[in-house]
Image 1: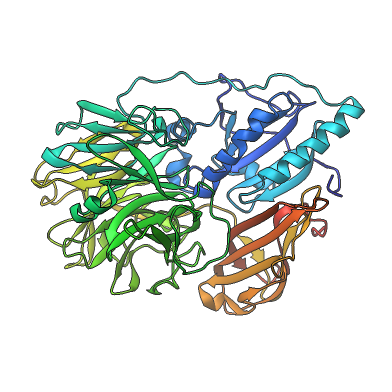
Image 2 (image 1 turned 90 degrees about the horizontal axis):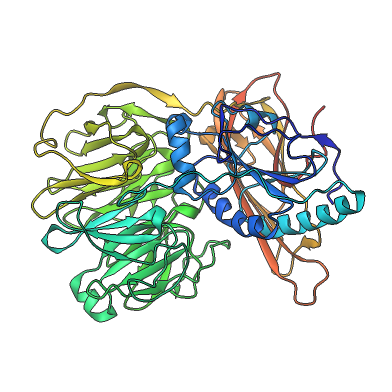
Length: 615
């Protein structure tokens, strides 16, 4: 096991428990079991990746391991009890979840990133902390060692866990994600939580057919046997392209990390891009064989610049896919999660989740969900129209420079040059007018709207994901004054770290999993990239290096800011002739408040325990 001090795990307390039949769980109840705490928030795509990484571990170690989700929210909407319960169902969470709306557990367990995993042994002691994703292999090794150790000590008790499945609901759709318009006003909807596509009549209610078996999985085939895993974005290819490639519609098969091709007439589904592996590599701008390249949670699709553009939410980028040449590659974004404009590809995005192309084809509109931003790409340059940063959000109309959104997921370009935005966590439909440079509210009271689409006759449909339906907006709403919203600016209430001005040491803590070692076979095994928002926060220390420790100089004139840190570590199996390689990567946005009495060391745990902790 890791050579770590014996730290007793804090007791579990929160607003309520989910997936337990309303029963509260204590660590004493779990004594004798290995406990894995997963600190997550449902807006965060990295957290969603971890949910999927943990499924095989839960199956394999079900009699010794209890996974407890601790939902510690970022956005205001994520604090609402109904929204948390909906997210637990939406993402197929099959373990108990503790609702931690005020981040009390987050602070007691010293979490600094979404997601954070904390492993607790059968005697109730913390043995390892891990930030980010990609820890499944290491966790399996860790659990194996804990099983051996505590079976020998007699402190391991096998048995069933405390999970109680919720009752199922009977609705036509279940948490639909995106939709497109077909001929004659028919709609094709991604029925995300049911892992299928549903074709609806022009009334938006009558089911004409379902495509996909409805079971989570990955399989090509006909309309009844094909399988998806939480599909999202849909794109109808230009007719001349479809005629060449032999399929009409591209589907973002999000959790499978694939793009799928759909033959509209027959319902046949085939894989057209993605290896099925999640991308964990280095940034490159070369074209790749579309079926060999790794993708990461493609969320929406658009036809722009003569190719398919995918919002690659999982790594904060845009990618391109050429269905004729069968090649794919990166289009924009460095994988740093933040807000930076300029010429592509050297820009920053933050979980792009919605795409729409202007009528003239010149502009690509993007909803950048984690920065609550509306952005526009034209003539090779990306600019932010609405949005302030990773931790700033709200529901405010008015001039775009002051207007605010909250985690928008969808966007639709209108014929007059304006755009509609599915302002998801505000439950609203917003409209940005580039002529006046203002944002207004068209409709509110919607249930987590995740997409907007325009029909040939000018009708507007909204995908109300949390209401499990598509809703037609009343005629005239777009030209009416709408609902004037003058709410307040909000910020994520995550405690800022008090840091002293001047020299500060940033340490990324990483201890390889049992049986693994750093892998220097392809160059330096570690990489650290540091930047700041605003850039003036750092007088020195920004940039890319190969050491996981770095001295920074915090500007004496700074008062607050966010430290952007991306760490990457390559490891391999230590005693295997054909050693498997592993890549662990995490990005942090660390809120700082500058204070003369603040700390001079910033530890960030990627994997392990911080043995040099102050005090």
